[in-house]
Length: 223
Ligand code: CA
Image 1: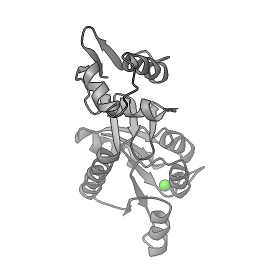
Image 2: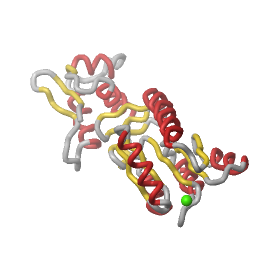
Image 3: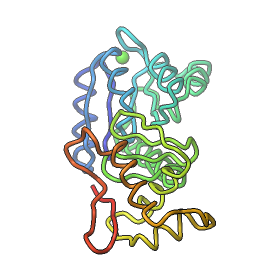
Image 4: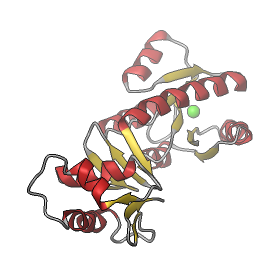
């Protein structure tokens, strides 16, 4: 899992990074609020360990801005303060859990694993992913890297069908049956036409096309 640490105490940040790396996570560290915010807003992390007191933007501000942009990355807030109102404020700003400093690394790891499990359970239900392409089933939105892609209802249905079978060659008939089920007016090459539309939206301008043509068979999506 890819974890961001935003912590201005560089020794602590490095220690957390080392502990996470030993657990086979990939960890990046930001040492101030501005860099932390910028990285957090990419939405490309599985978890953010966020210190409350930071130069430039503090942890609360970063959390609020992320949630305002509907970036739902789980946040574990680190705080030197143990006062109830500070914890409540943190949770209201959108943090998922908090840890009061000083803490044992074993406890940090336990919280991290719990949040990652919760995050996985949630995203598996609502999001499909192939490489850097993500399809959000609740918001009806596709995103490749940081680019949000507008799709029509049929394009969405087609992409969802492909992404539910990553790496698998799907025939035109299978695609037609699943995506155009009740549409008697669907013309014979409608699948090819819509694959063309999709490629235009999700693959054009990217180095690695995700939609592959399987000659004589149909199509598949793979990273
Ligand atoms: Ca701090």
